[in-house]
Amino acid sequence: MTTLTQGKKAPAFKGVNQKNETVSLKDFAGKKLVLYFYPKDDTPGCTAEACSLRDHYSSFLKKGYAILGVSPDSPTKHQKFITKYSLPFSLLADEDHAIAEAYGVWAEKSMYGRKYMGIVRTTFVIDETGKIEHIIDKVNTADHASQIL
Image (cartoon, rainbow, N blue to C red; front, top):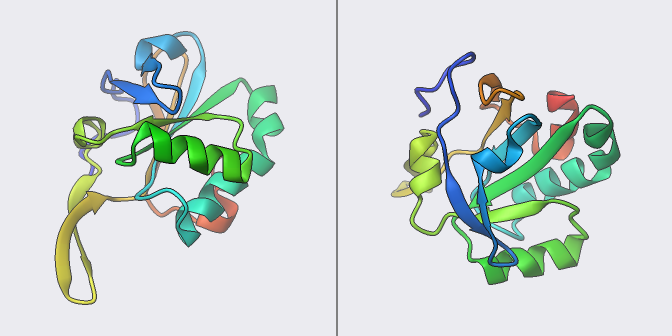
């Protein structure tokens, strides 16, 4: 699980979004960022989480937040997910898990007795100076926006 704590500097990252554009933490300097890690596009929990953020997107903008999702899915899968659910924010492809590992959310999981490596659903709220303001590790996928706002 994550060893990052509130008040620490957020680890720098660089990844490719659904448009194959490079996105980095530096792009959000001077802005607040909701950086959320989720396991897989178009699954029930991940869809509920993304749609909760989509449905409250204007509230995030009013409070000065940008939103960025991260999963191991490819840019192509992200684009399909964004199109299908009209998501107004970018999703980063972390196919080599480098970003998830930097944030401590790539870990061993277990389902039906089978162990495997995957993303532990976690959200980091990063302030304008690049420091972690809040970490949500018990995500309520259906109402994630209220957990943050």
